[in-house]
Image 1 (tube, rainbow, N blue to C red):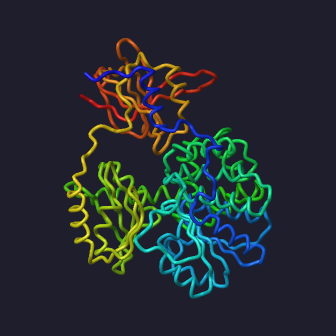
Image 2 (spheres, one colour):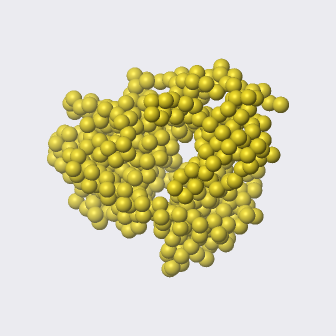
Image 3 (cartoon, rainbow, N blue to C red):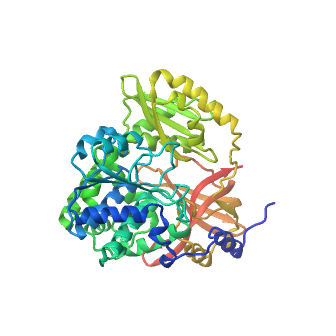
Length: 527
């Protein structure tokens, strides 16, 4: 029998996630530690002094939206008129591309945020059109790097910035800090940190080292925010204080929805709202997009699941004119359900397939797809998520190759969820435990919410709750100790009196002035 965890074991395991201890904002590296930061700053200051035309080029995900908003708000604060553009997912494709060059003609200095590191051809076009280019990005570098004035990307080999896992908005924040110093002006960097914390969480950066410090400071700033957009969101969600979960599960999907369904500029306009009335109206629009996104995603998930070949190690499915804005989320859902990497492709009806992939477990999806470049037209991404396009005629060869690449890597499937800290008995579940857990917040990527397993637990009660009976309320007993539990979105039926193992997180339930402990059940393992 495995050793059961004690409270001090839990504390030790959580502490081990923070090799450097908890960092604070005073530990943030200097902006100059980024390669080309000083060079880029000097060029932007020169552009401001010479009244040159500056255009910001963003991206349509939350990181790109917040990065663009940060730059927009900064230039508004120093009262310098700029242009900004977020490529449209459907018409323009990703990032700085040949498609958007006609829209930025006449620009003296273009600055990318959260994109550009793979824009080799677009950078060449900028040069031909006399547009000077500064790239700020956080993604991996391809063998060929764009030719431009400066590149700020912590993944460059010569970059001395000590952390490799930071997002685009963090780099934009650092650029603003550098510009503030160079211009010798006083601005409140904490009001920008609010948006940075949203991006770090949404872009699934590990919530460790400086990321944790920035999120913690950003959440504090968010909860005292005077930004109309944040006030409108808090009003809508009926929350006085926002947590990392509120951002990850509610705000981020709203900000993402406009880019998925129509155009991400709606989200930038929302975040940059000048008054509460505009913010409310713009938030309604995002809510409408998100409702549509959920319905579309549900429909495509069931279509994708129907196509899955259970024999494949890497699931590849495709459909006619599937909505390109949601294929990534559908891939994530299918991957989770089948516990395998998944790629979902949309067929445009003209022989081209375009889509997204999401990894699962230890699989490096970027690496195994990289070995299929001969079958692809476009490809980019990272270990956990990719974007790609190919000719319809290459699909079968691609499927064969990617499954072959997977097999050659000998990935071992995790039988045990790596996020489970260990076996704990009900007798150890106390307010002391939840106090210990709270100490290591915020939880997210790289610092997952502690999960536990309790074995030999008897089910005393399992009642359906919710409008359509889609959730379960439990009463469990182990060694004479009774615990309440709840499991969301499940249609499973459990027999009262059966003895099971339960995987869960522990939650403090605040209700009418009472605080009780309950188990947020993830899995009930019937023996």
